[in-house]
Length: 267
Image 1 (cartoon, rainbow, N blue to C red):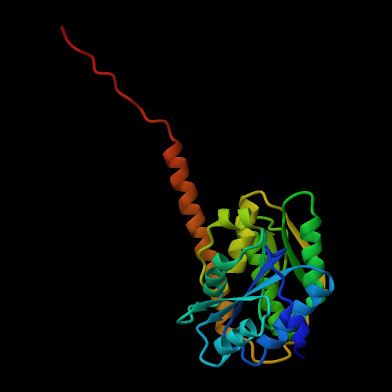
Image 2: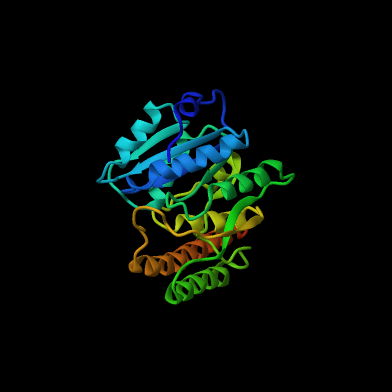
């Protein structure tokens, strides 16, 4: 599937309605199809989408394909990570290129239908109060072991950080307003970035809105999530909570009243 020449040539001008960052690590088999489905779905709804595709240190033709899409007139911006440092680094590298007030990010694997991404955008755009908007994969095509690991990870996160408002932390896309995203000062370079966004949204008093979706199987390419990634999730959760505890302790110490001693002069 590819956009026809008339569609590609009609790249919208002006500020986009939504900027969507997609980190792409060795996604030469998937990225054109993913971009095509998203752009087509948003154009059908007359929504100006800006795709920020990040060549996240790929060793294949991912970067070249992104360049081809831009040359063909697609509403695509490119960011580059020279050496892959993780999923989160790709997102962090792409965020400065975003021009819209509403900014989102998601994976390149088409696990969520393009039409569902458009629905989530409309909910975010029409919301009267600010929130973190995301999907929840209610019907996931995965094995029993993966389900157990996922449930354990989400349960641990909610236990460590308090009720987070979600039991599918890693589900994307996530969409929020630029001002809230900038205030989060995100720093995670690996898969923990999803959890960092959820935790910081809670700390900021930003409610999480979830839209239920069917989870799709990856159409092209291979998943970059490995068995070791599950262990990485757990370790990062505990490490981040300990970091928060240290910061809370320092804040309490700094807030203690300072005792002053008045010198008494003798006669």
